Image 1 (spheres, rainbow, N blue to C red):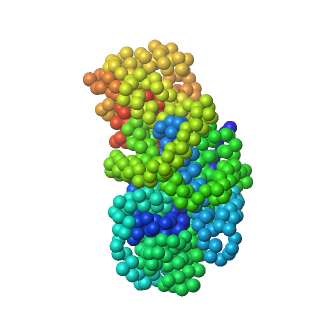
Image 2 (cartoon, rainbow, N blue to C red):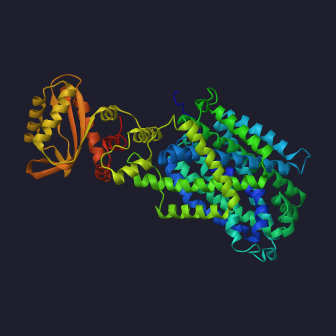
Length: 615
């Protein structure tokens, strides 16, 4: 089945609002009360700690998603990093975590609606879920525009809450600050970690984002900063105005606090804000979670039906319906606190895998890996993210770890039953092992390199001009031993003679004559031998890496060789090809990339993906 492309309709504002809306909901309007019951006033530090531990993963996801802006987000690049087994587990885990977070938001809507109606909480949540399913079916741009309105309105109300509430804060309510003990600070950080779950899940929409190289990293960082700031300020006001027994036993802490210092009017305003928050999170939950079945189906990890795209709205309608149906089941049958804990533990595990995947791609030295954004302080931040994630996971407790392992076992079982017999994929892990232990290049094929190359071409909207197509089809040689120039020209004349149906001796004589007239060594290490032959509409190229060197006259040793052969009527293209080679090889990083390439496919891709003027 041909892969259908999703429409690019999301701007930087959309990215910010999808990520922010996925975070500010139950994590702010319900969870602080449950977390306060565990940690006391130090709950503020637990939220800050959770945000800080998100930074390495936010950076890792930003880099990986700008290198591979595809539907499926972290599932997609974890699969390309570690292979199909871990990819299957990651795909289900991401989908599971996001769906749980969306269901959590819908239950939050029910909790606040109970202040106004007697309708059972879960029934309200189910009806709301059905509305959001329809909203996402009619189009990503419409859903995203709705998200912008919701998030802007939400942030405006929260600013009003903080501005009015800070005057009513009583510092006595912060004493003792560590009422639950210092150790509880960390277990509570694990508990509230799900509050930041939406931060990096916006990468699942990367395929639908305009200019993802800029808008994804910037949107993620802005969202994390703004969300962490609002969490701290709003929770500070809430703890400062509500008595401890009240705060520990409510599911509507923010509206209760608003009623203390702002009366019924502000309480109603906060209920409206909570609704905006829950709506935005539930909306973005379905929006982002549904892209995981789509991405997994494209890779044959799920049945082909999940990648069906609506002809009218360009949305993955089967994946959206499947995700919405799962969320309805979660709303009807799972307990709230258990839902939060399991979703948080799965999220922490995914964050750890994301940091490991970045390290794997960097160390594999795959030259087709072309991120637009590079995370700073590599690999120290990633190591901190991995260790911090494992620490938080341990703090979740034995029972939650047991449930999480059970979920991972289900993912492994699906791999063995369905995926293993359908999928074989190269991975960055195989390339890393090959680079470390093998020089024979027998472990990998060109599949991953070609896939990454095609992603960059699509992402950067690279024009596949005539020179591009010439390089795609030309022969590439990788020579290890030093060779004299005449012997080298004899070898390439034989190759080109077979391709062009021309006498190899004629080509050899022309190459040698060309060198006698003027050397084609353009700079140390680089030569571009080019000749004109008889015929019409004839043009061919050949790329060569000579690790040992081609020894030209006057002891000039060349390692990078571009061979061009064309007929006289191709003079204009001949000049354009020379200009393209000049632009490509003038890049200061070109020579290093050329020597670092692991095989001929990477050599070809270095030229294909290089920055140059395209016609």
